[in-house]
Length: 202
Image 1 (cartoon, rainbow, N blue to C red):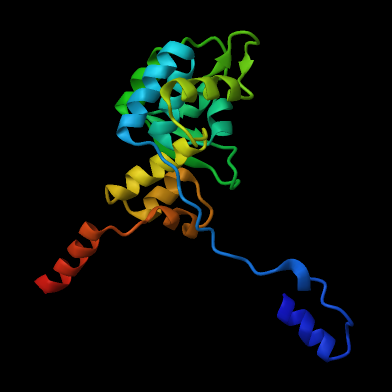
Image 2: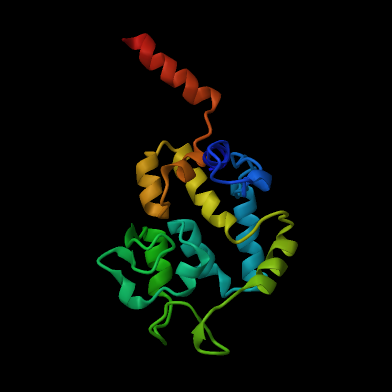
């Protein structure tokens, strides 16, 4: 855009570049935070002691990669034939996520007291936020610098580390851009060696 406005100035159409001070866009290179297996164990131990109601919610997050809002607004009607159908998503596109046996067992033990899967017993309405409980759980588990949204990062990282195709990961997570999914594709020495071995075998 800046180049375009500069050309307009050169042609006498403008006298000033309105985006001159906007700076340049930089690639997002922030470190992706995700749970280690040991941290996950401590997290669930802490949940059971501090806020048991979070266990099915966190399990849902770790078994699907769903966003917090998608979990809180999930309705029983969206769960059918072994899949979760998400109609209201950030990208505006419907997506389906297979239900794992672990998650299936969790869902079977949740009483159906509302059209929503997860409801706050104090309000009988869907949860809006769990910040306070989440902070208390993390403090007791001695897990630092970790947001609820990082559960989603954990799912993406685990799938990519196990060699799941990026297009499949993108579809499960509902990323609108494949470049977003590619943030989790960290080349590791073993995988680079395996790639070279393939060439060698030719």
